[in-house]
Image 1 (cartoon, helix red, strand yellow):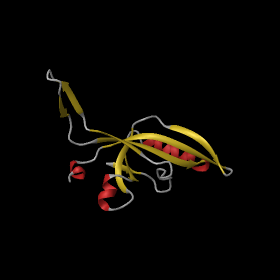
Image 2 (cartoon, rainbow, N blue to C red):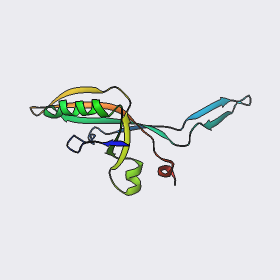
Image 3 (cartoon, helix red, strand yellow):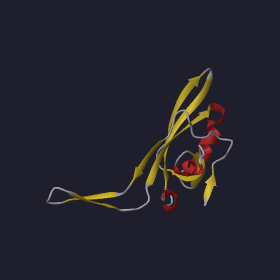
Image 4 (cartoon, rainbow, N blue to C red):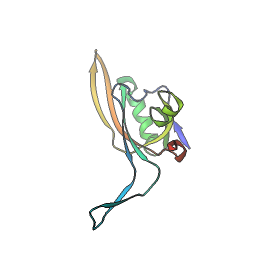
Length: 133
């Protein structure tokens, strides 16, 4: 079961963008003829998603507390662009992720306001049905 990301907290930044790294689980074996034999160790593309959250100073403590309590230990349902959204014809769709890296936070002054740019990597495992043609 996944925890739902609170709607009062900022969504992952669309301005900063997202990144994805997808692993096909390739295992390559060199052959004497010069060709390499290649096989996949899994059929579902495990995916690492780079997320950026722009959190304003007054919300930073509450956001960080919630993330600390939930995002690394539990699966979190959050709206993101990606294959599910593409199939639905939408910009974003609810998917389940879990944070898997340390959080990097940079304090940014923007027009006399303070924002924290928080970067983190999350893991996402699409289902076989999601990847079917």
